[in-house]
Length: 315
Image (cartoon, rainbow, N blue to C red; front, side):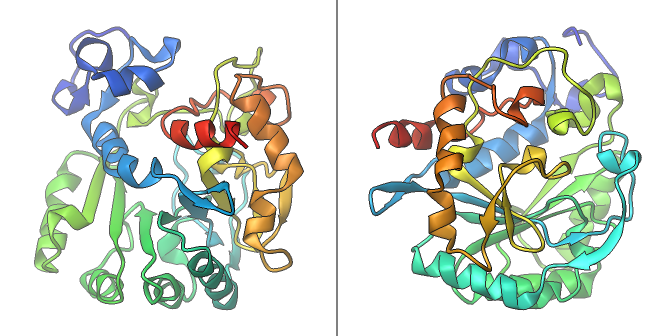
């Protein structure tokens, strides 16, 4: 999209004209002329300090971002999501006992990053959601939830924050009128604006739906040619599926092309040091997207993780 005036210009940030130096570093060549929403930029900035901090464990750079997929249910079928096609809705959920085991292992590793509940399903449809969130809050682990907001009610909001939830990130798909609706909802619950994030996602396909759009390693579309830029996802992020399987990254969460172990059967730290995962890191840091599913992925991969990649290179 060229940088022309358009109907939602008030909501957009124009990176090629006003980006700071840090933003320019992660903007790929084919992204320069596009627009990203202010909410995308704010959310990137909000997360950067936590994600880019490198905590070493036994001379290994520990992940700073843990993404949990708690269920396989969603009440929407967004055009940019594989659920708009044949990806199935399944009534399966992470067991609270598994969540507690994950929280325990993170605590033992002195994990200081963020646990992000999002994944392939709508988190607020998760059975035993409050119990799972509390597992992490009780161990003083920062935890946030990404939701479409459809199931948000005052009672649930109050319950989540009362047990220690750090942040709610609401993706708004219906229109600008949702801004006032959700602001008023959080105000009613006496939740400070610093404790929640509203993301505008109601834009058209020509506007990349208001997000940094990717092909989800082919789940959305096949690539004719592999990308050649570096990717730092496996340097800093750990993706854990509802059953405990560790996947390569959030971009492959629909295809689940490769798995590196299960946290119910093998310690998280051992999985993080898995030789196959290290092979991905060594190639991706140099822009070699030659292993599946990276051969069919157009994700940026450079928004976060540069500090972790640099540390991995010294090992």
